[in-house]
Length: 433
Image 1 (cartoon, rainbow, N blue to C red):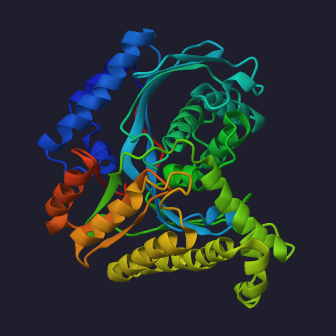
Image 2: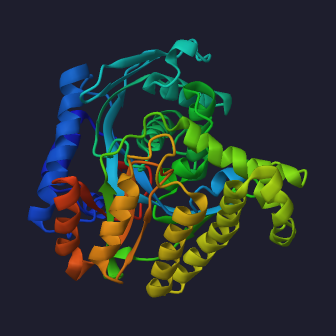
């Protein structure tokens, strides 16, 4: 490890250019690296200015990426299969041990937080806050038998808020990697760090999320996950170089709010669960599809048509996620695109998570999908992104048509609303030390 001063010097002279180029999908030329170097140096300098660490304090730079859902929309909570990936938008932090029994984190643009390590019990007043996530990660690391070390950190973020890129998972992954480096001698693997993040979010933050977000952020690259046993999911890296696909990954921000959508999200889980309960099961993964198909007439009466349609979506998208992963492994990107489109159609018609029945005038997602499909004119693929009902859509756009697509989308939703992302090969990591 090195001090803040020597880390700054290494960054400025290009010692970590290769790592930065890989994380942020840069071509390695000096011009392409300027922004990444400036950002990294900014974080280190701000850490030094904010906390004034000792010259001998070992400093390190950490990254926690956002994630994008690629396949398997609303399948994870039914113990199904998903395909997700880390992206080149991330949370970047410089951290140093402080020799104290306290964690101090300054996230740029937000109030500083301080967590004492002498009491790591759940605090109700911290629910839904970053402090809860940090305390929860610390508590789990300690529970795993590691001695905690206090540290100071300064963090910045490019993960889009409310975009379905999971800023909370990026933060948990970032903090988990700092603890892993300073307290665990880097012994925790990415899957363990993801589980620690989920624990913090479930128990301390108060959100009963699945594990997909944390896995997508922590593991890196494209990741296929089977949640048949949620406590021990099967995680498989999918080796595919998306930069060779000839397509750009676009996330379109429709500027529609996720606020007041709790009932909509809960209804998806509740209705799928009601279908499973008909067979004496808790989740659809435990119900054979043939049994479900045979019982549809009875299920329509007992659970309603929407519940039946949502169950149909689960079975189809669960299977499709595995097929998408296989298509990528075989290098068949055209087949992958066809299944992305099929998933999008199923989400719209069966899952019905593109707009909220509580606010039928707000249909930004269907509008974005319709306009996007028109612009693509049979090319690429397009689907709702993440939980749905509001927020973002995902499109795979031929690179030579990207400008036309961006211009058309931003003419409707405004400048800067079509974000071009890359699936990055590295998940949460130590960037430099």
